[in-house]
Image 1 (cartoon, one colour):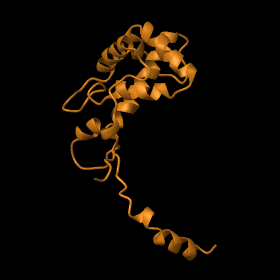
Image 2: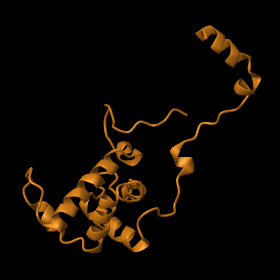
Image 3: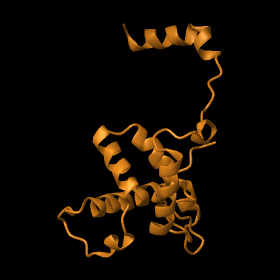
Image 4: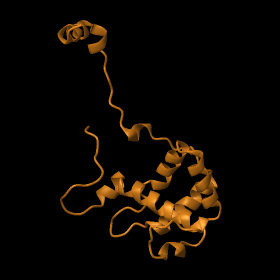
Length: 150
C-alpha cells in the first residue's frame, strides 16, 4: 500500500480525527498511596533524606523535592534484589558518618555503608531531576528538569 493511500484512509475516517485526545500531565495522575514502603519505612527514609540532602539557600532538599515518594514508586517496579537491599537498609540504616569516608571505586564491604552510599546516590538523582530542585536554581542556563508544554 502506498503511503498516500494510507494517509488518505486515515484522514477519511471521521472517528479518528473527531476524538478529543487529552494531554495527561504527571501531576494530575500522582497517587498518594504507598506502592512499596510501609509508613514506618517511609518515615525512616524521609528522615535520612532530610539529613543527606537538606534544603539549603532556597533550593529544595530531597524531602521537599519528593525524592522519598519517587523512590517508593521506583522500587515498586525494581528487581527483588534491589527491593531487599532497601528493606534491609531501612531496617538498620546505620550511622550517617559512614558517608564521610573517602570515596573509592571499591564497593564497601559493610552492608550498611553500601546501602547508605546507594541511598545517597539515588536521593541525589531523584532530587536533582525534580521540578522543585530546578525551581531553586539561580541565574540563566540549562536546567536538568524540563516542564511539559501546557
